[in-house]
Image 1 (tube, rainbow, N blue to C red):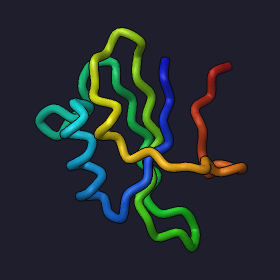
Image 2: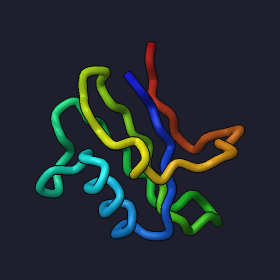
Image 3: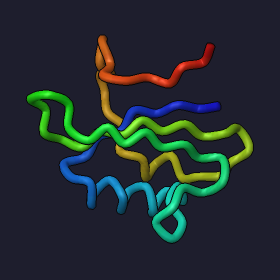
Length: 81
């Protein structure tokens, strides 16, 4: 599995990026894609998404709105235990 933390200025901008990357197909996650839509985080009004992608899924990583630095204390993360 590959995990990403994504951020855009709006939900519409996020959906456009996810569609361009091949993550959303007909407005639904493609097979092997798991999306955790967080939305805004406290005072940060930007739109946040956590994304988990199975190893055998093809996608265009260049289209994903990743950011750096990643948060030291993320609002939510995937549980692997």
